[in-house]
Length: 144
Figure: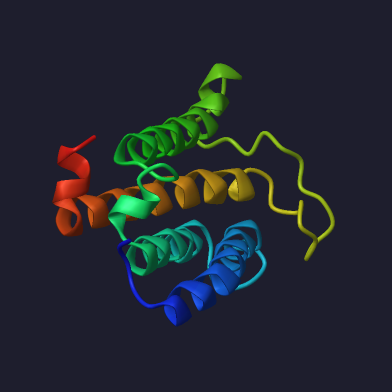
């Protein structure tokens, strides 16, 4: 049984989901409030890093993996490139705003910016988590 004390594990069970949801909120509302893909991605990665630190790498091995983090990072980068290049496919320019703007200060009011924020949030969150695993949990990766 690895990881920290029962108190730390219990508190982590209670707050890790809320931290993750707050990161998703920051990503989705990045065009309305301060934040966005990068800040939200860091918060999302922090939720997973908290789980690894609290429960230990052995207990979390079945739930999270370096390969899955790397896959998500690649998907985030590909999604960002596809959103940016879709304007070229439409016969116009790179980063063409192909989604019509909605009512100001609403969730879907910024065209492609929320899609770019989601892609950046996935890329940054998975990348930071993968960096943490590569630097701090090298035994975990070597066993994968």
